[in-house]
Image (cartoon, rainbow, N blue to C red; front, side, top):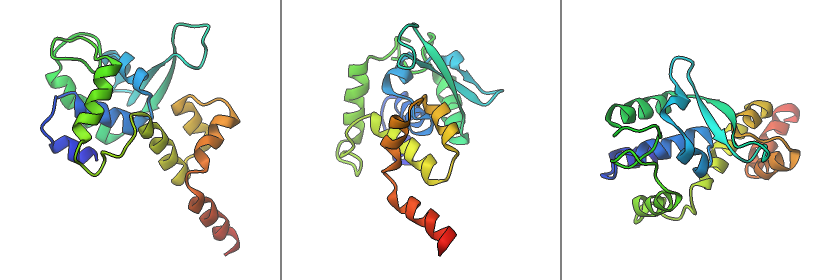
Amino acid sequence: MLEFLRKKRCPAFVYPLFAFAAHTGARRSEMLRSRIDDFDFSANVVTIREKKRDRDKEETYRTVPLTPLLTDAMRTWFAVHSGGPFTVCTPTGKAISKQLAARTFVRVLRKSAWEVLPGWHCFRHSFISNCVAKGIDQRLIDQWVGHSTETMRRRYSHLIPKTSQDALKSVFG
């Protein structure tokens, strides 16, 4: 899908926004709150501004390593960025609204193989499920996506039953 969007004629912020979602598992609201300064290319991480972990605080933070694809997408985007502090913004530098993000999601995927996707949150599920499928330590996944309860961990582990079966087969044949 990212390759499809990279080649598609659409607003310049679209590809970086989708890459951000797919390669960090960030929630839509976290991406829209994101600021350019949250991307630390020298440390190879992006800081995600949360609001869900501790509701007594205005924001909490977590970091996610930058993948080569995301690094390239964001460097390219920042080179043409219109200004202002927000990572994803309109041509005038204003942060995009959740409504614009939702409309953009539907519009750019219309009449494509991906038009069936329900919304931005599917990228969070996909990110977590792909990490689980590749055997990434659950503690790292929890750190990257901000999970702190077993209930949240189990919400995603059921998505790849074949991985669980294959793991047991690797031990007992």
